[in-house]
Amino acid sequence: MQRTVRDALIAVAVVFGVGSLAMLLAHVSPINGFGALLDGALGNPSEVAETLLQTTALLFPALGVALAFRAGLFNIGAEGQIVLGGMTAGILGVALPLPGLLLIPIVLLAGAAAGGLWGGLAGFLKARFGANEVIATLMLNTIALLLATYLIGGPFKQPGAGAAETPPLPAAAWLPVIIPNTRLSISFILALALAATLWYVFRRTVFGYELRAAGDAPEAARRAGIDLGRTAFTALALSGAIAGLGGATIVMGVLHRFNTGLSPGYGFIAIAVALVGNLEPLFIIFAAFGFGILQSGAIAMQAEANVPRDVVTLVEGLVIIALAGRRFIVERRTA
Image 1: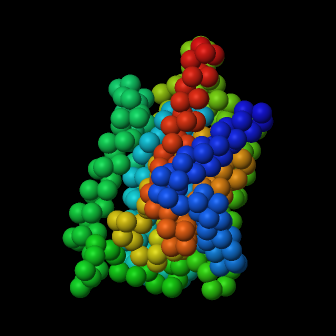
Image 2 (image 1 turned 45 degrees about the vertical axis):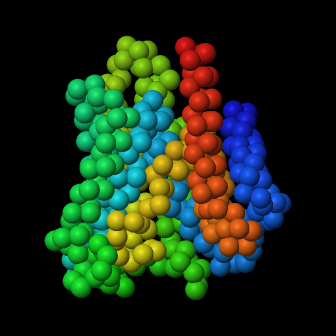
Image 3 (image 1 turned 180 degrees about the vertical axis):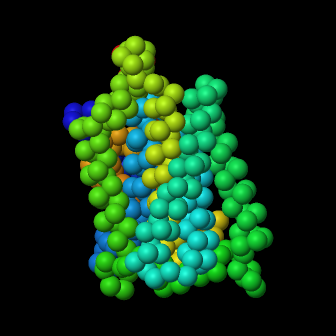
């Protein structure tokens, strides 16, 4: 609990410190800049809904990243898993002539399966050949994006479309909206339920214990009879499945079609979200909301206070570096 609070305070300090410095260098008052940020993210109900939409898009991959981190594995491939999950949803959502009650769960599960397959591939390489999962997942991001670009720009491209995208999904494949006249769908509730489920799994199940043991003391876990290879494969496959599910919800609940630009880096920002939440699912919800404010309010900050949108990207990147570095130093000292 204390570590989580410290990490959150570090993240807040980085956000306000670096953000203020960047604004001053851009000859903008930090008070005006952050005021515009909050106004754009929380100024009225529709803006709050948009912030919760961004929160949801970050929460899925962040939970997946946290699951892998719990096993001592760095899943840097959530971005590619989001893309493949979204692409699968975009293709199947158009191809399957089913009523909504069947179509929606089938397409969501298919998106999760696609992401799980991609994460599981890195897990297999780790378990079978001892491959470094950081390099494997990072390279698989590029392969996933190139594969999606080829398929959506070719065989599955909407006829006559100028951009690489699938045809629009039928209304039966759309996720129901929970706030009228906004884009916030039931994916938000699904993400919260998933966070609660993972909290229970981490704390109350044998699998959660094996994840924690494999991540905290792999040699002791091996001597206790835990199959580290199987744990690594399962953790990365499930991590990818959660990120893939997130990609499917973006396609089904927001875009209503797939295009290769569906994620503005959610998979990478999710690393910071997971670290700020100290890998605890319930704390990750609040971390995702904080980063959702940054994502949602960045446009208003640029429009109202003339703050370059890149300031938000800079802050998010430095949060990742600060928290990852702190975590590395603490683990080295512990070892």
